[in-house]
Length: 632
Image (cartoon, rainbow, N blue to C red; front, side, top):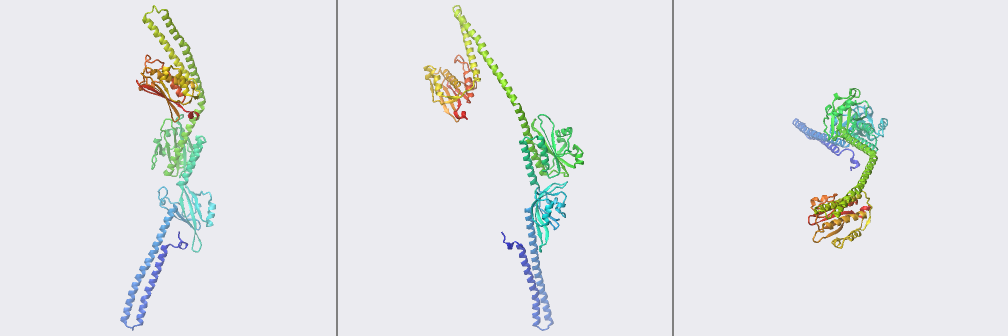
């Protein structure tokens, strides 16, 4: 940091002053030297004419040399002072450019007497091309200029200037009728002369237009989102949004918003800032349905995705009063097109007053506004649909409950019919066949006796299918009552019901307890063990292995045999009702057992799968959740 004694005159100026002083000393010496020599010579010689001529000649020669030397030194010093001053002014200008967008100076009467603009504004436009009309006027005398600083009004600000007080970052807004708005902050310091007299003010101003308008835009967006979250009506939000967006533009304009939901009524809902900008229903509908024919692309602005920017042709204005009474000079709009049949559409129209071209920053703010408006409209449409669904949910639940009750009643009626009405004819067929065979055994031919045996067997097989179907339907209506089941004990009980030969071929590992319905789980183990014993019965050395592994959140159980096996390309049919992969002559059964197993496992939250190979046996694997998952 510079010392106080060094904060006055610049160093280059002090050096120039020293050089000028040295030049003056040399000039004096050069001027006195020839005269002194002349006097000494005249005093020491006689009055000889030739001597006087020689003296005059040398005096003139020395005087010319001294004059040339003096002029050269003096001119060099003056040029140094001028260059130093120019350099200081250039540095001052550069410092001003770093501290603000323009420099100003005013006289003791508070009249602006000088404005020096910085190179370019925030949009890259030279400042000199749009000078402010402040010269020769006090601030409060400029038409369209207002003090928007909350600390001051014109009276208090004028009193501050009268008292010669400094001020910092005072906000002003310059917004004439036919020009773009400028919001700026000014900082000023009083100027005093050498004798302490007041000379006026000097200071800098900074353009804050885009910063302030962007801050207003953010505040407007927050208000809109809060309104949407609070479920305010969309038309009210749109009207408030239009008024707020109008205050975020750099030109005088009227803003109109439009939107429509094409899912029900195909008409636009319009909200604007001026009721005089009306759109007749027929003309407005025709315009928005064919806007491309009535508009030109917005010059100087690229299209942004699904948002279409355009400028309305003057001959298609809806009313002549827009030009004559409202002073509309140009109308441009941004429209978000629908990309799906039932997707909402929305647009923002800006009717500018006094300015023909669309400001680049205004276009960006409108694009931001229409995207947010679209999100809010789509959210509200979704909320309305959701509320409609919620309103009918109770009725739909009642209808579904009644339908389910009716289906259960029909299923019970079907079960009753199967268990009673179908069993009686089958018993009659089986019984009459047996009677015929017993009473007429001697007179019946062998072929007829074989046919009666086939009738009886088929009747009994049909009864078995009916029993399996009844068991499966009964399972669908049975509630699952989960309790802690000791599977080791459960499997041992099932094996105890087998004969010793069949029991010895089953190997069982340690089985953990699980939470399940004991009756249903016993049915699972009975069906799987019975299938394994049945299909391995024709093997040379039948073997059935029951194994268990602990998973992350479940237990994995396997029942593996070395029997007939099956072809894996038919594995998806194993768990269907009445599906069989082996002929009933080879292995009896109804084809319902595995379907029942799968249904029970799924109702317990597990899964079941099968793998095998013809002649090499089969392996059935199922999972059951452990205690931790059930308690959660």
